[in-house]
Length: 95
Image (cartoon, rainbow, N blue to C red):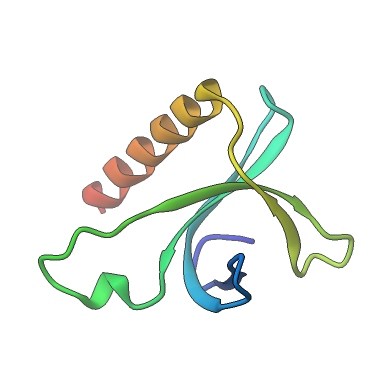
């Protein structure tokens, strides 16, 4: 997954599928994992709405298509993700 117009489909516990747009992905040497930050598709088109951004770690598949997403497990990971998100948002504002 790279930056750009990428979408992922998440299936919840009840089998419902929901489309999300990938905000960005990054790798962490510290945790030896890859991460994806994403939000509900179309949410960026709604004015004055705060967008809920989700994060998961993932293991890319061999073919580079779908990966296996995992929940974030530690407070240290959440802190690192928040720092990466703040950096990403600050760079977006500069452009």
